[in-house]
Length: 120
Image (cartoon, rainbow, N blue to C red):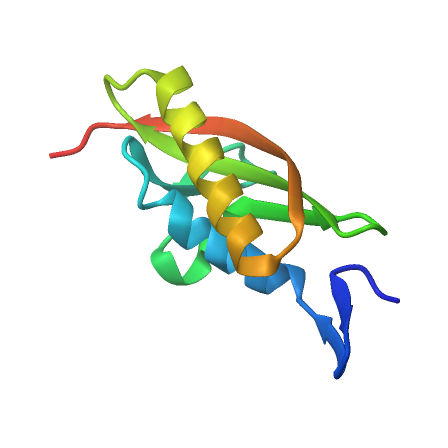
């Protein structure tokens, strides 16, 4: 069976990692202190805030053979927030929601803070 697949009495359900990334991204940007997902341009090292349509570029989803998910988030946080608190909140919220959504276990959530933004 493929990664991200579950067998039921009626057949097999396969969830594309892109679907998980999109869902996790939309949950993440609802969290307090998260401005959005970030994309790092490897050529010049610049960090770009991603628009809502391209959130998944800031998230990497890995699914093991036994359907355990690892998520990597590249985020931009609000200026003045406690990064540890914001990260903890994001991890707990996303873990719960993604597990509920997919029926798979989330083992790890890695957060890479790529930048800070002042919110007007």
